[in-house]
Image (cartoon, rainbow, N blue to C red; front, side, top):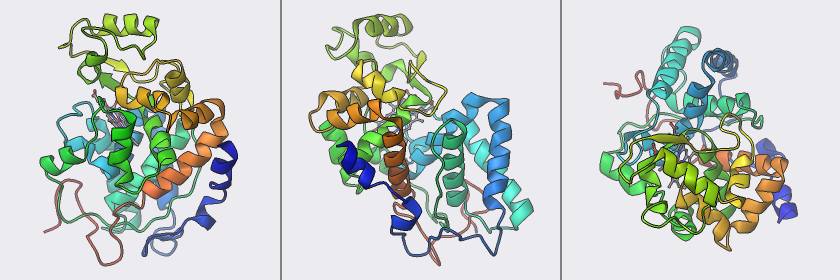
Length: 303
Ligand code: HEM
């Protein structure tokens, strides 16, 4: 398993096939500083409030995958994410000119830098995305959103439709090492009878935070390392200390348990695969060239 994963993850920028219109040097002539401006801004945000940025990084990437911030099942996505993105857009406008850098590219660079600033891998991202003309409806978004009560085969079925493979799904799920979960997303695993795939001490701790099925409290998703981008999420799964069925079942299911185990043992291996998966996700259904627009405001289509 490890050798297979390693072989497929060498030299991302030279081996990945790019969607037409995306490029590794897209802003070379129009705003060569775009990436350094974003990184410097995020470093400041990061110093001010680490949790703000960490809660944001995957919110940003997830927006690309599921458009989570509009969807009722996920009430916890941070408003600060949108503020950070808007601040970055204002900076872009000041330094690069009006409507030069899309929100989609800003979000892609910001997600990558936030991962790095949290201790994760450093990698290049291809740029040149344009923003969508239409917004997804709540219905469309909800339809796309997997549920935390789904098991691994259901999650795999949902995500392989979006051209992810099994290893991608396990690598992406690691996002649940960052941020918070509401009791409502996992109390079915506690009551009336605690789920057998949950560590007993962990069960007691969770019952303390969520004393009833309708508790509205929150708890960190990763008990081992909520503040670092590492592979402890997988160690939690191996120790049966994760909140959602959609996460824990990745260790229980024979299709995915060996990938979880490999990632739990080998941080570098996980980083390499994660970079490939993020590069794939960053090219999913993107608009380039003459499609879409460079939006002036995050939530308003240009008139
Ligand atoms: C595999 C299917 C997935 C399911 C079923 C799922 C479900 C959930 C649920 C139920 C929550 C907690 C919401 C709450 O209680 O407030 C959550 C939080 C979160 N999810 Fe996912 N998710 C999935 C995949 C992903 C992916 C692929 C990413 C990113 C690449 C991601 C990033 C996050 C982040 C960062 C949070 C914490 C948000 C915060 O604290 O503000 N999720 N997810």
